[in-house]
Length: 183
Image: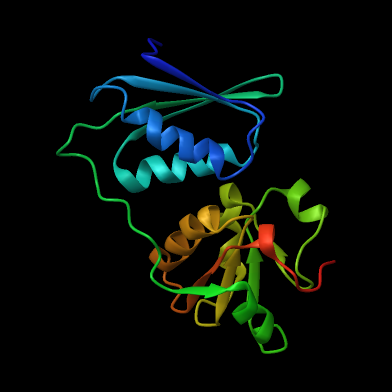
C-alpha cells in the first residue's frame, strides 16, 4: 500500500493518537493515505469510529508486535462530514450522584485500563466490542458511557444512539479526573 504520510503516535494514550491523527489528515490531499503507528490498543476502535464519523475511509489495521499500523484514506471534500459530538453529557460529579439510582454505566476503555480501576458496577464494553455486547442491554434505561477522557465515550454514545438507545449520556472528563469510588 502506498502511504503518503506516517504519523508516529507510539507510546501515546487516548485521546492523543486520535488528536494527532485529526491534525495529520489535514496535511495530505484527498485520496492519499495516512499511516498511524500506535501502541494504544484502543486506538484501533477509536480511529475506525472517527474515520467513519467524518467520512474518511478506514482501510484497516496491521499488527507488528506491539505496534498497530492504522491506514486511513482521506476523503474528498464533498465526502467529508462535519464532526458531531453527542448532545447529552454529564460531568463526573453528576454521574457520581446517580450511582445509587437504577442506571447503567458502561466503561468503553480497553480491558487493561478497566482492570486498573473502574466505577463499581460499571460494565466493561471496549469500544471495538460495544455494538455486539450492547445487544443485551435495556435500550430505554438511563445509560452513562465513560472512558478515560470523554473522547472514546463520545463515539460510543453516538453508536448506541444510532442503535436505538434512547437515554445515553457521555461522561466528561471521564476516568482521568474521576474522584469517586473505584473497584
